[in-house]
Length: 330
Image 1 (cartoon, rainbow, N blue to C red):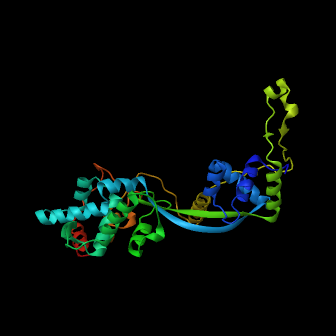
Image 2 (image 1 turned 180 degrees about the vertical axis):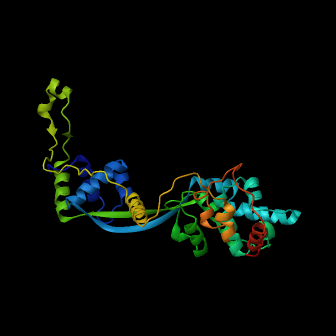
């Protein structure tokens, strides 16, 4: 009893009022009036003292829109805009390239590449000679699923399992992941636990119900000393036997250590580390290797996009024609 914090006492008394239906954290917050941070601390303390136990634990995956998703809802997702641009170009007979789409729709190169790759895979568009995009007239299952998900999640969060499999697959594919924050959806894991009193906790709770919760003072203030009120107050006991927090010393990042090790091995084999301004163009780095337009290596994270290049050399023939014909037939 003497070691109980007032917050712990509130939780114990709340649990005695719901013996038949073990409450969750949300229900305890409503019955105790505690802030989430206060309730979490009290519950963890009581668990450590074995005065309460976890009755049940469920895990739910909750889907919601990110700020990018809100933007896609208002202005449509890149895959929808690329497909719409291809259909519009087909109706007007205009040639449409990836650069045209980027300029017209003001989309990130990575978003356009990803959308083009998906649409081509689904047979909704074709990439013809000259790198032009043509609509096949087919619908895109991904674009339709994206619009449906944006509309449903715009009204609020939903459990992932409540979506049918096709929508769930698209949602998971376009959810925020580590290293890729530009996605319209977020999936969070929400753990719900319910709690019950242990036999020891039941005894303490019954004693609290009989004797009541005494008001405790946690800090001796100048006012208490000056007025002499400290003589009638009950001070909370402090545990001085607890270990101090562990301080972890700084160290090199594992990836930095790995890079240094690789460099050391290569240098020891006779290689030389070179530094300079050598930058190769997209043609030789990607196009000449017949790299698909939607390949991840073409993303903005791996490529420098120069608006007005001044040092790139003109691509000589027959290389330009051969690569262009190869890309058109791919």
